[in-house]
Image (cartoon, rainbow, N blue to C red; front, side):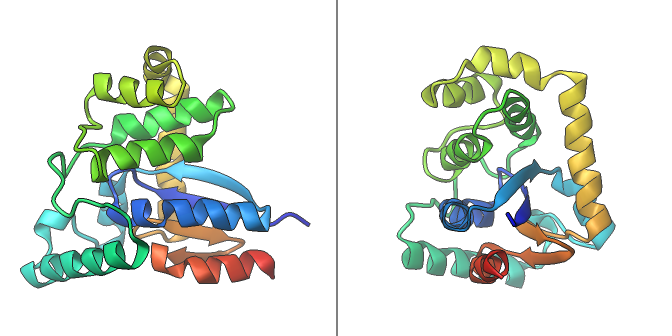
Length: 198
């Protein structure tokens, strides 16, 4: 029986970016059916007692940078610890990914390109023209996708994704849901792979 996994994530999350390629490899090896659900983090933080990065204690902000540096070295990913466009509003990027999903597209590939734009390429994913260019770089019709991203069905799905995340107990990203079990963080991918194999 094919296992199913739901991936809750945000395009502006460095932790999601750090784990994304490995997640795709896990999915390829396991043959699991994945549902990708980009979410809006503000209401998730509000529901779970979390805080946006800028409101966290200085000690936690400093430790975050240490951990990002450790994982950058461990994974050999060229992640920029202080990207030019961060924090960034990633709501349009999320809707673009959802619009691509509605068209049967490879959401994982497009999402990786969007995250790479933030964390490697110093591009502003809140800017519609930048998003259109990212989509075009992936061989897609960026202008058409942007138009679709503004549609009510896409907005409804984005809200549904966020509400579902709150309902099942998500408090940070990436979070992976297999059955009723949650795995928070890119550093839990080994456990994710074990669960998909079980």
